[in-house]
Length: 265
Image (cartoon, rainbow, N blue to C red; front, side):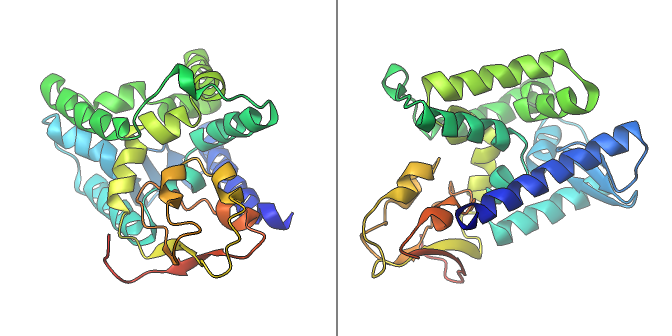
């Protein structure tokens, strides 16, 4: 269980948030209502996804002061702790993608040669979503977001939502490893830019590293581990989700969470 402590904690947090959303819809609980784009805590504190709000603003619509404050609050939190912690600690699609990722290893599926996509594709999709939002006057990504669809499927029983989630799962399993989270999702791209200089980072200790490369086996963002075995430093890439899996599987204790206060690239 020691090598899964962060994984278990992430699942508890992700499932608890989903449970509260379901309770808010079916039983009228006021602890957490809404969705992953816009929610309200205890019927008083609004929380908004800054990427969703940005799409709304460029589409020409105004947002209320509470929504803007909620977006600013979330933005500052992820600037501080690492934007892509949302992806591994909050986002429900992470559960689906992780299952596909683990099944690929169990079934020894290595079919990345069928499709080759740049990990920068998510940044182009991010830019495109804002352009489309501005042209058509709507929050473009929110309409087709698998994250929103999974939420609707679980909370409201939407069949279409399950279909989209199934497509993402099958693509991740058979076509491209970490296809959605690692290559396509513009929300992940947005948060990787937001949290690039975050204070909480994984730190690698070269002196303890034996080059076993177990961290590469579990990381969905392998390029961020480029320093492993080469030098002691923080995993600085904004694409790192701070999921903690590299820390859990490292038998050499060469990886750990640490606080970073410098602004180096």
